[in-house]
Image 1 (cartoon, helix red, strand yellow):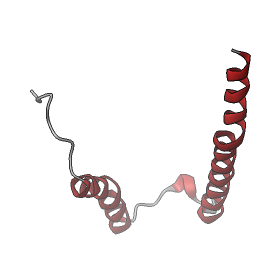
Image 2 (tube, one colour):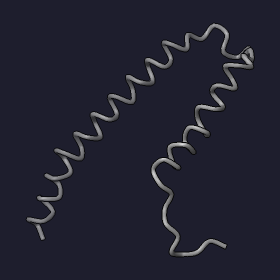
Image 3 (cartoon, helix red, strand yellow):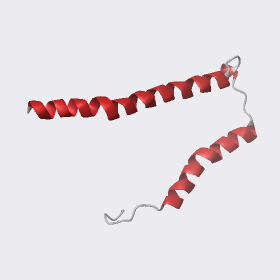
Image 4 (cartoon, rainbow, N blue to C red):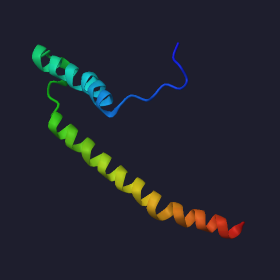
Length: 81
């Protein structure tokens, strides 16, 4: 059973765990080179570029909300109270 006053893992340990969870399976898949019949005819580069573009737009909207709209809304609520 884990103790309550246990120290959190160090940054290097977290980096190693992340590497083991992401990079090792990716390298294994590249080595095995399985054929995915469902992905034939799909341009993965275009799909990935669309995903990156969508994430960029969502990030800009989220930051605009946090930096612009939320402070104005909070200030308006504070003035009403």
